Image (tube, rainbow, N blue to C red; front, side, top):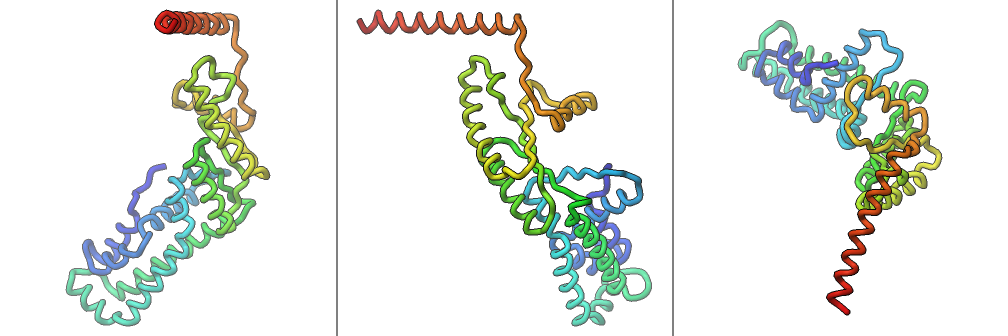
Length: 270
């Protein structure tokens, strides 16, 4: 689904006139663009019939802003209402002079729109806090920064009383698939250190481990094949005869190179 990223700005422009003073004030409320975009998505989804809705959210900082929308809107509405009460008459005259069209109290109409929006976001927030309706699935990789961001997100979700019981760890290099690569062995050791920390921190969570593949997952069939690992634990396939023979040949070549280097060192340092 693709929606206009700034639906709220368009609505305010229609109400108060393009480039009007009121539209500028309303659009300056912190987080108003994100809130109205989110409300537009909810409005579109509510008009359809889905049994399950998946939101692929932005990185941690943006996701936390999403959860703070009700509070942000409440503060913004409070400031707008205070401004309306203090300078309502003057603002009506100023907006008229600056080209605001339409009949009636434009500020009052804008306030009603924002109040209605706040109600939509609060309803979404209520659904977010219902574990029977909503849960967050944290997707991460076995590295320090990702572990830090995951812990930060889970702590904030708990503060907002939002259910989170699943962690998906992606791009894991399994030891059985390393072969003779020293670089891959080093990566496995590094990842294992953070995997141990994940399991220690979230021992009561459902943790799913997904592999790092040789190629990117693209297309419907590729996604379906990869998604099976969300339900069935991933296991490295046992190598066949040809794979073992190829690995043996690589190992023999490596041994020969090491022997030659050792002989050269012995001849230069008798």
